[in-house]
Image (cartoon, rainbow, N blue to C red; front, side, top):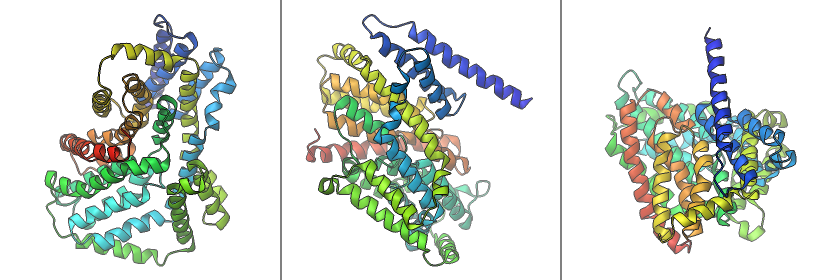
Length: 472
């Protein structure tokens, strides 16, 4: 009976998405390019499916591409063009590397080592969690895999070691640790192009709309000052907002040491993973010297792993998240390219430019950035939020004469930081909330206050830093 009910709901949601797309296609404004508007109608219905979730993202994107080709809107070759984009294969490679980080237990060892070294006090434990996120952020592109697969189980285990459980003294340690883990994950996601799976969508939109190249190095450089400041201050701020009752974290530190002892000496595969990690960071940050692109460097890392034997090809190809991301990301990029190629972006930009004539570009991008940040309350996925809004906001900013690079980085970093607002915004947030240490009301209240913290850091320190870099 339950399965039949779920099937009915799935088909009802699919029909809603289909009807929405059909209605939208018949409401083309005067002057809108016909093909571009039809692509937009399908694109919008796919984005609606990300909210309603009748099916996973991959199948819905495929259905959108099939509709575009079967209806004769665009040829199949154009519908599949996104799968040849280097941005897509950067993410796939990063997912394959991330699988090795988990399977070799390199990520777990990094986290436990930091806890063992810094976790004498609760604040020290907090900095260990932030440090682990900071170190793993560049090579684990799924913030869900990083936060939910590596860090959240460790946070949960440490909380229990400190005598704090969801149903027994959650405020003793678990509440603070869960909030800290979730919010540190989002800062790490914002700091690196490879910190979250959908970040390359922002970089691609910046290139297509603004003519700005957000390389791995440029993304990390722009985030360096505000990101490190945010990581440094986050434990202190949360310590004031949601203080743990416990001060001494020695039991958690001892548990980490016991777990490290159980793991034993560094295995051969862990050492190879660590070597690959260093190679990737060095190559990504020295592109100006050797000229190797971000995607190519990621695939060099993949090749190092399977040639050295640190990862088997069978393990790599069994990474379902990598191939699922390939499907939806490549499809979304194909639709975004079609919107540009068939005149929709140009038409939208021209239409908006008339509406915002006379406004100062810098003021407009700051207002747009705030709207973009807090519109996350209406979304349950970072990817859906980015896909639905980032290109449109870039178009509006461009039409007002806003500095292109400033527009790109503000929207890039806010695309991740905005997930602090709710308990349903992204995978790792949902997982940390699901541990049960923090009630809904406290999560929302803390999230709003943390959003103000992010705005103070990323505008208060970020704007001068980006000015120094010559980005506006």
